[in-house]
Amino acid sequence: GENVEQHPSTLSVQEGDSAVIKCTYSDSASNYFPWYKQELGKRPQLIIDIRSNVGEKKDQRIAVTLNKTAKHFSLHITETQPEDSAVYFCAANNQGGKLIFGQGTELSVKP
Amino acid sequence: DTAVSQTPKYLVTQMGNDKSIKCEQNLGHDTMYWYKQDSKKFLKIMFSYNNKELIINETVPNRFSPKSPDKAHLNLHINSLELGDSAVYFCASSKSYEGQPQHFGDGTRLSIL
Image (cartoon, rainbow over all chains, first blue to last red; front, side, top):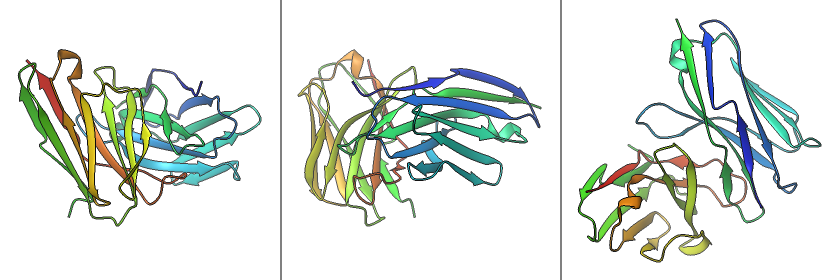
């Protein structure tokens, strides 16, 4: 069935380092891939998204890459800061409009 | 000026009770959703409405009944609450149901005693 696998489940980096979170999806019809950041006790917030007609998208320190052939997409955060610490979720849509979320990655940025 | 607002923020109640959670969006979106986030943080879609019409109905016990009186509102009624219903319930909305960013409310933390 539809599935989105996300790795790693936890990630700890030093302030200033880069962080990479990877996701794979199973539905070849998926064409929309958002990333959400959820701080403790808060709502998920969209930070960046990419559509299947684009291979890469960048917004300041955040970038997302998509490999449709391999059904992989990744989130890259450069020059990490303590305020980047949160749980990050990837997601992919299916034909019925449903968003299937990954299991989440808890990112910890140590000062 | 919250875009997606849900009430109440916290709900503590006894097993067996019936409760409702309300959601309203002022973004002019056509599609609204209910998600359940369990203790392991996993976000799972429960229901989705597009222009007041149910379009997604996941494998959810029929104790959960959504209602959309108009496209700006989506409420969730839960009958005979069970311990396993304890979770954070998020409402969300999007412009349409096809590949659009979803905006989440602040969540309702439901605790069953």
